Image (tube, rainbow, N blue to C red; front, side, top):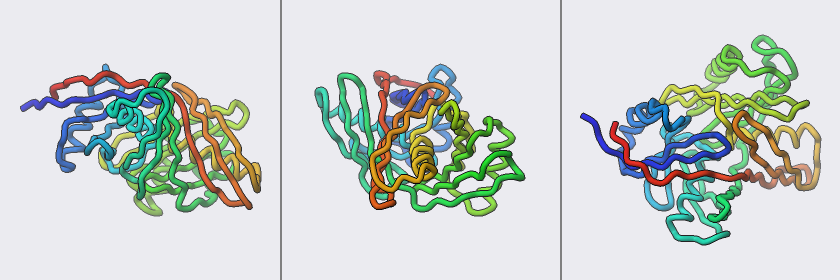
Length: 265
């Protein structure tokens, strides 16, 4: 039997999040998400469930940077903020509240991202050619940044299997970054819904890539901005380092929100 749900579709640099406004139990997330992602007219890559005005959860309880800044804009507009403002949100995969700066007139958003819990170099020579890769673990998602290697499904699957043999994170992203063109192709797998997408862009992946670039350039102090071009748009990330230690990372860019849509699935 079909059910009706109210949704909002958010486009963050081509990374499409479907927000479910209707309250649903967590045990139904995966089934509902699969049905919504099958609606090709929305071009959804991920599904996020709104818990209340302040909190939302990704379908697999993973973390998503683009969904977080989109939810910040959604909250700001619901609050009736005109122009610039700051809101605080809670998102799955993040231990604490996240601060999102918004401009509701230009639909600009900037979010201070959670810092990685740890990072380590990986030798993936048996899977992909090129330099050693960098693994970066965040709350709710593990990213692997691979330099100067063309993106490919087989390469992604090989890296995913390599990570899963070590542990079992809720989501795995592989960021194929080309140093020469400064272009990145993000590929993300979410365990609970068993989906793999070559995404239009990836917010947390942009964060990981910007940190990796700052580390590679061996900066000891300063503020460094990286604009990373991705298949459907660009995301800017600012990395702040002091005394050789990572202090903060933000990502920013515009978000397009649809009006609420009623769907029956």
